[in-house]
Length: 150
Image 1 (tube, helix red, strand yellow):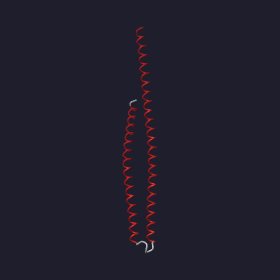
Image 2 (image 1 turned 30 degrees about the horizontal axis):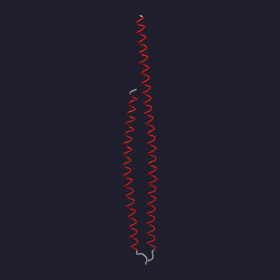
Image 3 (image 1 turned 60 degrees about the vertical axis):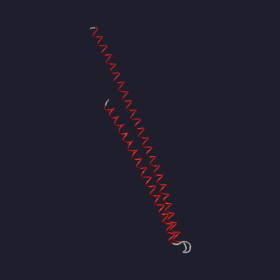
Image 4 (image 1 turned 30 degrees about the vertical axis):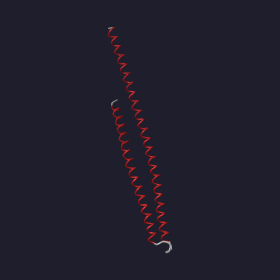
């Protein structure tokens, strides 16, 4: 009976140790998962801030580009008005129209170049954003799997 009591006491102590180790492992896993979620949330929040900053920069660049185009169009109008108001002896209508055509051609080339550059930049940014979204989704899926394993 004494050996049984001793065996029972030993068994209870082993069970208590196993329970304690299991609880510690569970607490550790939970802490790791919460930390990973925290890091993921921080990364996501920073990504949102970075994206907002990028979009604001794009808005400013587009505004500046539009102002520049507006100035160029104003110059075209000024050239046209000058050509129409010129006395017959100073410049011929054909010379004024040629000057205006050159100005309009330059404006059209500038606009095409700006649009092409903007389209190329948007394509690269879209690819980067999609890659980041995929990586974030995979990280969240991995955390979900770890949570399911608890």
